[in-house]
Image (tube, rainbow, N blue to C red; front, top):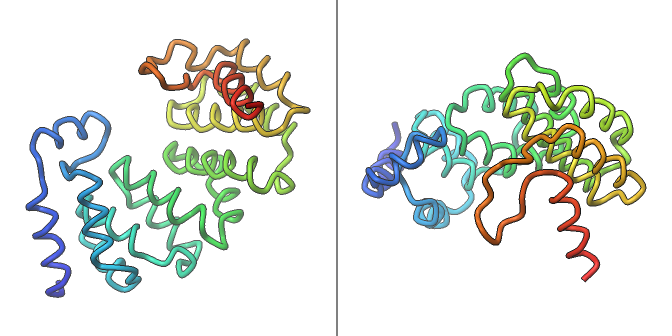
Length: 221
């Protein structure tokens, strides 16, 4: 272990809050570091792809999160990102890898198609997360009607991780593609996925019909 990696691990260990760790563990994250403070650590290190690789290799969740903030997403090969997703244990590490690395990768479409249908629900859900992003940013790369068919047939009984991302994809289709909006809302109403999901005040429900309606209303001004 290099001296700088040891220093970063010590700095992150000093930020551990047992009460925060208890809360995080209920959500699948084995650390107690405030993310604002963690981002400050990463900001101090600046972009350093080699250091990111060393921090990732520690298998320490806060260090892996820092690695994802200081790496160069476009420098990873598709196989490396795939391996990292399968190595990631903590939910936040998985989420940041998808959002900060995979979505910015030149291999994003290859990863999306490779991950969809994977036997590991975490990996398959990552494929659906990339699909939801593609629906918004690169809709010409997907068949929206085929996606709606697949969601209609499989979302209700899907693994909870996959179900969440399929539902997000459904909502993105309804929000960003007016010609498919009525069908997206109809699918959501019939399947009732996340209809009773507990939603804090002033937050939009993830239930697709409500989510779509609220975002369309905001877009209309």
